[in-house]
Picture 1 (cartoon, rainbow, N blue to C red):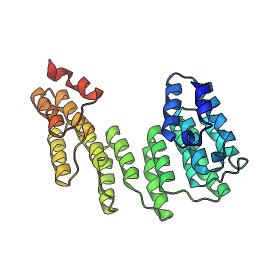
Picture 2: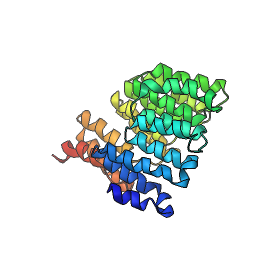
Picture 3: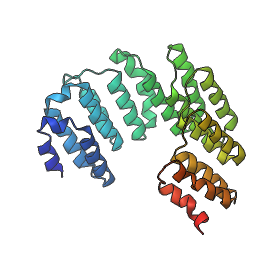
Picture 4: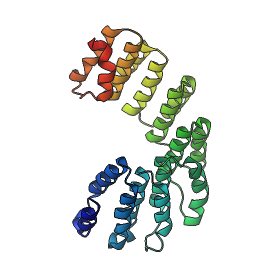
Amino acid sequence: MVEQFKESSDSEQFRSRSKLYKKAVLKLASAEKFSFIEDILEHQKQYKEISTEVFAVRLITLYGKAGMFECAHKLFDEMPKLNCERTFSSFNALLSACVNSKKFDKIAGFFQELPASLGIVPDVVSHNIIVHAFCEMGYLNSALSVLDEMEKTCLEPDSITFNTLLYAFYQKGSYADGEKIWDSMEKKNVARNVRTYNAKLGGLVSDCRLSEAVELIDEMKTCGIKPDVITLNFVMKGFCKAGNLEDAKRWYGEFAKNELPPIRATYTINNPISC
């Protein structure tokens, strides 16, 4: 597979197909063939595209998805020698590689030190990655403080910023803090989407507030937001946990009504209903 991929890489058309790269790297990563991944990605440095940031970002991102942070960092450092400009795009790719590789201890240092040396200003995406990292580490107050930092630099948080925070606070059981973030999102005029509602729905279900969860789904529909598989899984799980299998079964019927295909987790939740 490795030699075939490297031979195929000689084709400019092949090199333009990022999905093929992602598929190959993820397949090798699942088999823990990390040396093979390094072999095919290092091979890409000989091609003219390596001087374009888009191509370098692709490789850094793939290293990150494979959990190979050291290789991602090495490539980022090599970009000037490869005549490839480093902007906030490659900076953000490096931060994402930190998160995907679980190198959370490095991300704060990069965020504080690299922008000045690169002559760039972190954008909303940069801050969203930092929020995600803090949430993954369980440092929710630090994640929340990023909103203040964004305000100081005149950056407006977006739905990704808020959704990341909402999921973290609601999942932790900090429902009251989650509600403050929910209200802040409205004050900032950031549009809510299905992920926003799912974050709150998960909090309500975890807190056994099923009637409020159902009301929230009604609110979603009123706002023109269609429930997705995650929405229905949450409410089904809540009713199953409460021992109300009839309502759980009724909500399972919503999959067909909403033309949604159940996922593996759905069938796991559905086991008690089928018995």
